[in-house]
Image 1 (cartoon, rainbow, N blue to C red):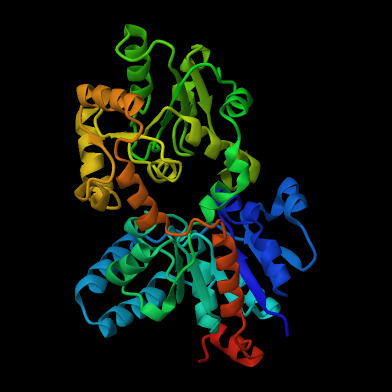
Image 2: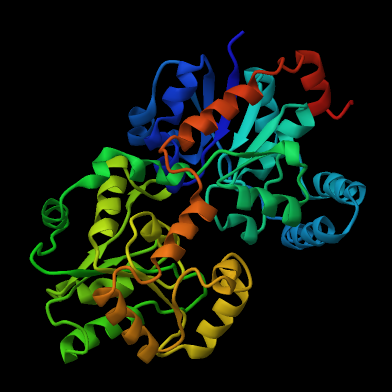
Length: 437
């Protein structure tokens, strides 16, 4: 009997990372039927784009808020780090019993569909936790995908039986920070970056610049924002600073600035700069109900833009790793011209206190703490492209690990493998969901 997978998809970025990289085709080639649970099942343009034989769309509901969930996850992390495994398991059982209620729609879906595996494609937030809870109660295996290098540091709200991660480094973090058993964590690689390792990311500088509206005769700085994750945080200061340095001659006057906005950045804050001929604003497209996304073609263009940039300036975004793939010199500024206290607290707690700590401690990228340091760093990037080259190579080895462009294939193979177990018996599934066993 062919395996049947129920896959939850909650964000536009997951469309970019998975569907645009042919996950559905790889699963179909393996003989799997797929039910796609997503808020976009009612969006005709989305369903028309991804509809195919053997695929069914169903609705993924908004997770109901629980005031104790964040606290429970923090307690779980402490237990995983210092307590025996039986204590952690007891806490997990308590979480499921007290924090989640069975949603009738999911109970009915699981009885009707009889999936062999439920996949949460974004295990970090709680958006898929109710579906996973229903699956685990029904006795159906679950897989959570940790879709980026930094997300284990941002708490794992959706606790699945199995976990897929980017790298060995992430695997170790899942042991240390979440208490996962080694046999339950699978290193499949960064699906988000698959397109970077194909021949398409070898376009000439001229064609890349023309396609983006940049002047191919002039160099450009790739400025990537990290997202406005703190209320009232203004990210425009770095763009304003770069333009002032170019205008004064402190940086070459022929420099252009390609400003790429994180999906959580405020586009309206940057719109006044769009009229400046030195600036090109760039941002993701949008899928209704799912948010920001990119097509594979757009990802390829993005990679070419990183490859041909004279330098990358980013306050700690994932572009730090993407630039390393293309050996583009990079500077990470961690100061704010106007909101110094807010910035210091943000980097101390959310960046260097989490995913960026190892990069800082091992000096894998130049981190600058003021405007003079940033000016010196950008100048050095322009004059010495090999600056920090060895560290960039190490970033790729440590955090990206797979550079063959086949991470989506590996994830599909893992899904097929986990879904290959014998189906849950109908009567058992229904009894579990009814709370009788």
